[in-house]
Length: 124
Image (cartoon, one colour):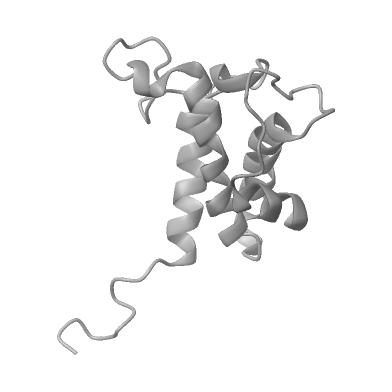
């Protein structure tokens, strides 16, 4: 092998931890609000920048896409070094999709279209 091992280009635990920290520090900007306003438009943390918050990143769209942040939390769930970050991310995102939770947003169309929500509910 030219690069030493076949895992040279693989994703490691530390990569998931780094992503979780980035998501918590840059993408989740305000836990006091419900819905998509909780999330930034991009990793700069902006919620008002005209370019980064264009129509494809409107508030309702950000909430709808936020569920995919849970994929990293599910992948890192068994990493003891990432445990606190995993729980923080899940507690920031999952309640927005759980009916009956105070953070549940009724503006989001609720359909069981994403397995990631079912997996997150199962694991956490």
